[in-house]
Amino acid sequence: MTEWTKLLPIKVLVTGGDGQVAHDLVLLGEQDNHFEFICLGLSALDVTSPDAIQQALDRYMPDYVVNTAAFNNVDAAEHEPERSFCVNRDAVKSLAVECGALSIPLIHLSTDHLFDGHYASGYSEDDDVSPLGVFGESKRQGEDLLRQYQPKHIILRVSWVFSARGDNYLLRTLENARKQAAIETADDRQGCPTSATDVGRVILAMIKQLENGADAWGTYHYCGAEVTTRYRFTEAILAAAGQYEALKTIDLVPVPSRALHVEVERPASSVLKCKKLLSTFGIRQRPWRSELVAVLRQIYQKDT
Image 1: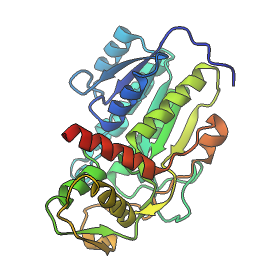
Image 2: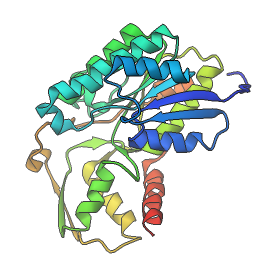
Image 3: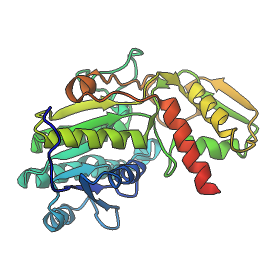
C-alpha cells in the first residue's frame, strides 16, 4: 500500500447520526485531521426520502458516504415490516442510486442476522445467507440493491455491537442488573461482541486505504476477537461493572434461548469470520474484553 499522502481532509457524510456506531465513528474521526465529518441524524436527513438524500449530497458533496441508518429492532420488525423494509431496503437503494450517479463510494453497515446460525464454526462472506426474520430479510435485500446500483461499495457486516450509548445489550444488562436479583441469559447462543468504537476504527482504516488506491470493493465481516456465549458475555459485563458499583444481581442463570420467550428466533451462532478483512486491508480483530473495559470506563466516568 502506498504511503498516506492525502493533503485535504476526506469529507465523509454519515447517515443515522443518532446511532451508536455513527457517534463513535465521528468521535474517532475528529481526532484525525485526515477527516472532515458531516453526521446527520434522522431530523437532518430522512434516508427514506430520495429527494432528501439527493439534496444532502448536492449540498455537502462528500468524498464518501457511510450509512449507519437502520431499523434494528428485531422483534418490532415483525410487527412493522413496512418500516423495516423502508429503512433497511428502500433507503439503501436510494442511497446507492444517488451515490452511484455522483460516483461517491458508499460504505454500508450490515448484520450477522443475514445468517440462520446453524454453522457453529462461523460464517465467511461467501456463505449463503438465510435470514430468520423480517429484520434479516430486509437487510439482505438492502445489500442486494446496493450491489446492483453502486459498484463502488463496502458492505461491512458486524455482530453484537455495544457502546456507552443508545440501545444495546450491554446497557440493557446494566439496567436489569440494577433492578433484579437474578438475570436469565441464553447459554446456547454464541458470537463475538464488537464495540461501536472498534467498528469506527475499521471504517476509518478502510477509507484511508481506499483513498490510497485500494481496489477492494465488496463485502467484509468484522467482529471482536474471541467467541463467547451470551451467558459468558453477560458474566463479563457484570464482573467489570461490579468494579464501579454494587449491582443488585447476585445470580446469573443460564437458560436455553427458547426459555427467554423472544418473538423472533436469533441465530444460534453469530460468529463472523474476518480473514478477508485481514488479508485485504490488513485490519486485525481487537479483543472484545479490552473494549468492554474501555466502554464501561466511559459509562461510569460520564455518570460521575
